[in-house]
Amino acid sequence: VNCIFQGSKLFIGTTGAVNYFEGKTLRRIDLGEALDEVRILDIAEAENGDLYFATGGKGVVKLNIQGISFYNLESGLPDDYVRSIAFDNNGSLWIGTRNGLVFLDPDQNIITSPDPEVPLISVSQIRISGSGQIIVTTFGNGVLIFEDNNFLNLTEEEGLISNSIRGSVELAS
Image (tube, rainbow, N blue to C red; front, side):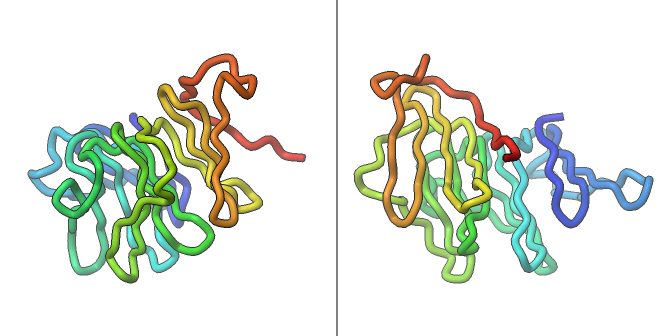
């Protein structure tokens, strides 16, 4: 098991497959032969029910009623190895790869960099906080926090014990 995501159902990402529970029955989503040996590293679900899968080598896979489509290097991703994805409060899909951070406007099908000042980063996790902040942890660049079209980069200089941060959690207040 590489990831677990609670959306409209409980989804489980593994190598070559995505499973979900329907009641007490575990079902498998057929992703086709192209993804048989590919690791599913993260899962996100759009408000309209479209499913997105971060993969270790095939970019981002979108699954909906029309079928499967891919976002990859040719589409504008900085790398096909995608570690983390998350929808922000505006419906944009943030995509974190080994070689950069971008976001996708699903309505326009446009991939964009969040800010030209953002350093080239190796993303470990993207999380949307309860207040809507986009929190990006990285391997080597600390933590980036995006809010209201601005970003803050927290590193060892600001007091982090290390610039390699695997993930973050939000504690209930």
